[in-house]
Length: 204
Ligand SMILES: N[C@@H](CCC(=O)N[C@@H](CS)C(=O)NCC(=O)O)C(=O)O
Image (tube, rainbow, N blue to C red; front, side, top):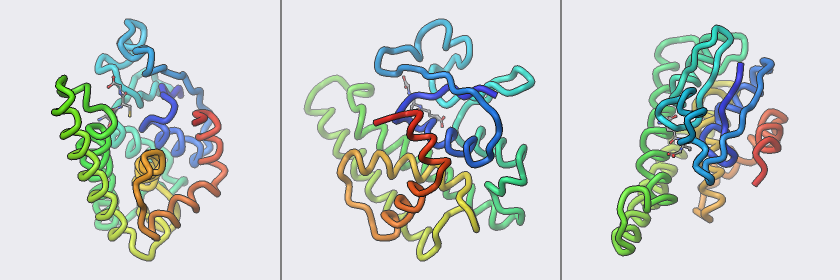
């Protein structure tokens, strides 16, 4: 398999899952800052011009964080990236969707790149503040989901934890205050060899 990945981007979460599974894979770096995601070569891989994209062994490409994460969990059940029972799995998918769909796409995407959505400096300032609020409130909600538990996905880090790691990674970069539970989560993730390898591959 080959993961199309950009350093410090959400594809870091998929890189962590591949490392947790321990499956052989290659990483193809896409330089978002130079606009490589819009080059014809990458649009041939993902016409949406986004990472993550996963080229699978059958030659097909899967995109969208949640779809890739769930496919990996189902394809490699021995890695226990998703609980077996449907009720617990639905709760993990609920958290995964909230982290990617809301905390990332309606929070950090606006806070970090308001210029992609509006052009006037005052509108950008407003959008940045809105995005920061959504991200901060969203992280607070995820912290309550985590509670005293070490992981969102069950007895070991799984699909929702990989997503939670990349948004907490961004929160740290933006100096957003994290709850005690989220700091503990982040610190525990950083102790994992899979995470260290994934971050080494995408140095800050
Ligand atoms: N909904 C997509 C979002 C992916 C996404 O926004 N990726 C960002 C990096 S975090 C990207 O590739 N941005 C490039 C661009 O928008 O030009 C997913 O879940 O995979």
